[in-house]
Each structure stands twice: as C-alpha cells, then as structure tokens.
Length: 167
Image: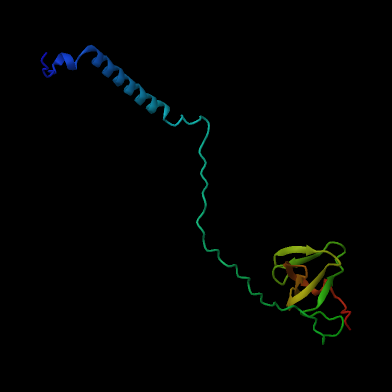
C-alpha cells in the first residue's frame, strides 16, 4: 500500500459533522452572550423612589454684632432751690381741679393748640419746658414719666406740684 498524503478537499473540510459542531458552538456563543447582556444588567429602578440630595451651604463669614454704645440721657431732677408749691422745669406735678373731665394736653401752648389727649385727675407728669403765657394762662410742657410720647402743654391752673419727700 502506498501512503499517499491526504488531500484536503472541500468535502473533507465541510463534512456534515464538522458543520453541525460549528453551528452548535455558534448558537451556544450567541446564547451565552445574550444571557450576559440581559442578566448582567442592573435591575430596573423601583418605581416611586426619588433620589435624595442634601445641599450643604458653603461657609460664610458671620458678621459680628456690635452692641450699640449707650449714651446717657439726662434725667430731669428737681430744682431744689424753688420754694415749695412752685412749678418749674424738673418738678413733678399732679393734675387737679378738673372735676373729673380731665385736663387737655395740647400740641402748643394756648387754647388754639391741637389736643393730643386728656390727662385725668391725680395723673402725675414731669415738667420739661415752660412757662409760656398765652390766652390768660401760664402753660407748662408736661411729659408722663412712664411714656415719653405722652406729653403736651397744659395750663398751670390745673396742676399741683408734688412735694419732694427727700427733704
């Protein structure tokens, strides 16, 4: 017998067993690729969940609050050299003699001055300005010791100086 080298023909390369084996391998590779693609993905996000984000403000320079410098305000003091019973600036007076109708506190001295409010009998005020003579009366500018906005001009006829107990 003579050994002749085998010749490769298309029949020997494309025989049915080789073709079926190659086809099975190709289908297997495609299936494995599809499994990796579909099963290897992240699951779909759950519905109804909203991602949260927290904002953190950048640090800023906080201004230092400066306490206002308090300036002393002059307090009215009794003028000690006035005789007792005399009205003057710095004296406390009490409304009297209105018969319960009250004393009109006016914006300006005189009967033509606008009425700011009425002070009742026994109400106490500090004399801050005056005297001014107008319309037959001596007028004093009075201020309530508990409210600086409650002030006005009043006739001296309805004011009684309060005795200073410091004597």
